[in-house]
Length: 100
Image (cartoon, rainbow, N blue to C red; front, top):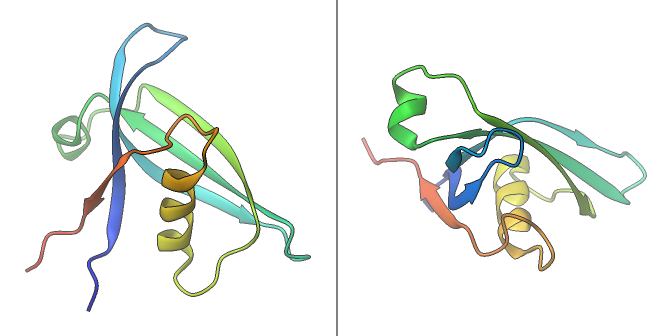
């Protein structure tokens, strides 16, 4: 079974606070039923450790994507965010769920 993406890692600076943000997690999404677009809302944290420690997100991003998911919605969204050429998270590293 393929590993599931649970977050994205890409060092960015939050424009509002000037703080470094590296760990992004989808907190909600919208799928337009006519199949034209989707939107992912992400929370940005200083690090994965900060999120695991219960720290609040420093940044929020809403990203529009062309098309609608096929199969696992979250996996499609994370993959589309990485692949979006003009996106702030383009080329981000996928963070995978640890095997138990």
